[in-house]
Structures are given as structure tokens and as C-alpha cells.
Image (cartoon, rainbow, N blue to C red; front, top):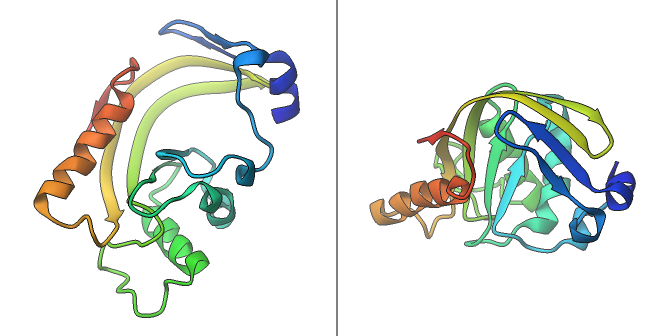
Length: 169
């Protein structure tokens, strides 16, 4: 839980090298409203939690700035885009097939092959990592030119550049 992570820190044992964030260096929040807008939101929940995502992520979003990457079991990006539009009140007059969304800069679909197990509060074991594949599912209407599409792709690569994660577009 967030409370135990704040007390004990966060540890990932991994085939690629272990990570330990001590409690005094860990920014952990119980409510996303405490965080404010961010550059990236990575959604890695079970697809059964899909309905809860808009309320969780909306406080983190800023149009034309925040990008959302959904890495979930099942291909849910269309459902997530619909729920985000509905939560924002954008549903009416928005073409469902337009590939546009107003609440953020972009929504990306991600597909990952990974084996990780939650061992307990603040403890994860990572035993296998394959390719993380990403693609653009929707973007803000002001980011629709070919040049902007290239920027979305580059932003995805830049997100993972400091890591050992193997990514492809």
C-alpha cells in the first residue's frame, strides 16, 4: 500500500538489476489529486479496473502536455478514450473514430511481455522482460500534422530512453 511504501520505501528485484527507493526519496500519494498535472501517466491496471481510470488520471492531465500510455491486459485503448471523453463531457459532437481527444496531448496503446510479481507492499520481483510495443491511439486536435505525429513517436522513445526497457513503435 502507499502508506507502507512511504514507511519502508519501494524495492524491485529484477533480472536487469535491482532498484530500491528509500522512503525519504519516494514520492507516493494516496490520491492523484495531490499530484497535479504531469508529463506522462502510465496506466498499468487490470482491464477490470477500466471504469475507474478516468477519475484516477484526470487530476494528472493537462491538455497539450500530458501523455497517457495504457499497458493493460486486453486491447482497451478505444474503451479508455471513450471513458475519458465521457468523463470530460466531450462525448457530444466528438467523432468516436476521429482519433482525437481534448483532455490530454495523446493516448498511447502499449503491449508488453513481462513477468513481474507483487511480493508485498512496496516489493516487486521482475523475472522476465520482452518487448514493449507502443502506438498512438488518439491525440489532441492541435497535434494532428505529420510533424506532430513524429513528435508523439519520439516522445514514446524518449520516455524509455533512460531505462533498459526494449521498446518499438
